[in-house]
Image 1 (tube, one colour):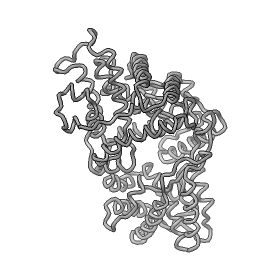
Image 2: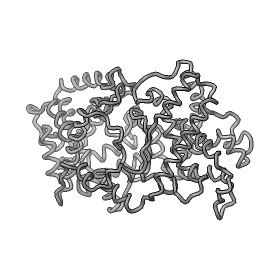
Image 3: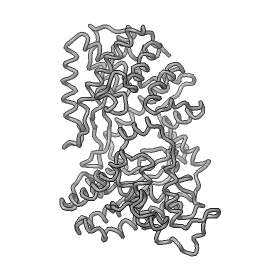
Image 4: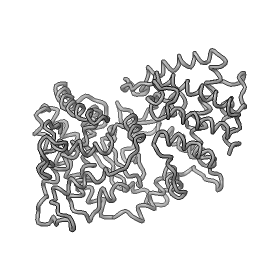
Length: 529
């Protein structure tokens, strides 16, 4: 394993941490080219091929800021010498360097130089809106990064640090491919970031790894074994009901002008959906074609992972010369998640989320709408949130909201920002909107003779709706994991994704008889949709 990594580091000019480095022969540009274009790793910046935001029918190369190993720039800034995460990061880096043959005191000193360089990168790493051509997303970062690199290239120590930083970026990305001592070394950092070292049984690790690499092939097995054939048409009907509820509610929105309201209806009508899995995975020949050119060799786990990276890089580059494919899935069937793609104006629900506790064909509709219906409403409202509203019904960047409507939307959104700030977590108001949409679609059938009560619980269907909604967010989280989520995830922690929306719901307070001005029935209620 050590030999494999040393060979890869030598290809980028060596790595001073382990001694196989020559200051005279090392050059920055060839090292960057190999890291990005051979191993498909990120160093100093990131890039990808994606849909052109201004013309969603084509692909463009997108360049963005990058280069940090830790999940958020906040972990680097204004930290004391005894910071838990940075100390754990240094311990992890030093352990890997020693495992690769370096001597501990020297390795630790050079790894500290890498962290100091990453701190400099973190100071110029900013959240910057898309630019005119939507090719370079962070021009200010790239300009500052260029100056920083030039500064380091002007000194011997700086040049060594740059070499070590790029070498570490490559080595860190390969640690999970290496033997147990390397994976054990990474647990100290995970423990500091997540509050748990994330130990997994071997079978679970292998299934996860396989899904990451050939997820559609694994998805074909998953669909054959566990996906209920009735789920797809039933889910399609649920989406229609939620979408109809959204459109029927548009005339009630006094803050939205008439012209914008009509365009919103057109965009809602144009939203397409994909449910369960792509059809090609049920055809072995088409599935083989998906992975044509990817070869695995038995007992070569490390090299197989490198082959996967190079295969995916080639596939990604091939997209550049092809028109956008509106039916291409970005998630594999086993994933328990859903997403909205603004450039496609499309919502997608993989088979993995169409399972209990989110959804079951045999559940009462109240439970299904409380859980899965809210997820559907959540994804639908992404088409009209502060980012989705910037794209028109065809998936192109285009301001179709009038300025007066934007101002009214922002004023109402501020209510959520103020409310969620009291929870000391990032806000996301689409959860409340999606629950309200699902409630409205639910109201069309709640209480009908065919809606049998759930045996064993003395709850009405309206109450079951809220139970279904809350149940999917039941979780146990460490303080470290919550902190990481607040720094790196736009979603609120699970607890507040329940208490926030229901405290804004008059119906919830009425059904559960919540006392006025209590935590679950606040005096001031926020609403957008």
